[in-house]
Length: 250
Ligand code: TMP
Image 1: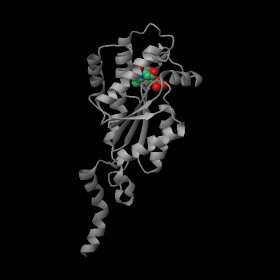
Image 2: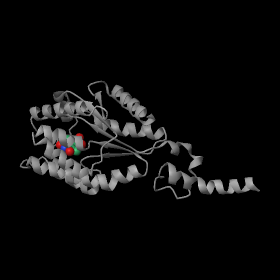
Image 3: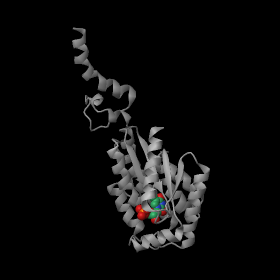
């Protein structure tokens, strides 16, 4: 009799206990979804990963393969990009990157990036993390510090204050810097026909961006990992996979 009760009640209460004490289930699972039948779900925990780098570092080409790899391993992964990733953000992206907008002031540029960011943080990133997903973002606030702060030589403390306001204080768990020589990166970007208004800034601007990134790595070594993006594409992809898997195990 007792055993009978146990088998009846177990499927009903386990998801409840799981959701209450261990982690929230992604919203698209019904409340009584029998998670214990799918052990891989027990191992997905939220993680916010950002990829950064100077122009032509290859972030954008690596992300889809990383996502596919992690999904094959049973993780729930959501890729996104900045600026963009929401309807509002993609509209802002067009304004910022339009080669015709040559008169855009660095402060205007800085604020537009923050507007797009506030939207994606609230509309996409925070809800996905709350659902226990891994979010991988192609650029995040470190790009603002590197490009608008170091690149345009604006007051770093003011820029940091703005990004904190835009993100509501959401800091990535892991940030990977795909580091590449500036001239090599710009050459790659020109070849791929992806030239935008920011790429057209001087080489000295892009040198300051890269130097800025390297300073940020030194200042916060526990969040950053540097990967040499000058290597063969396959080697970079392998290194990225390894280091993300390592972090997920921690
Ligand atoms: P990408 O998507 O090709 O990397 O282009 C994004 C461009 O926007 C790139 O030139 C870096 C720049 N950018 C900033 O200057 N500040 C920012 O905060 C972000 C997210 C991007």
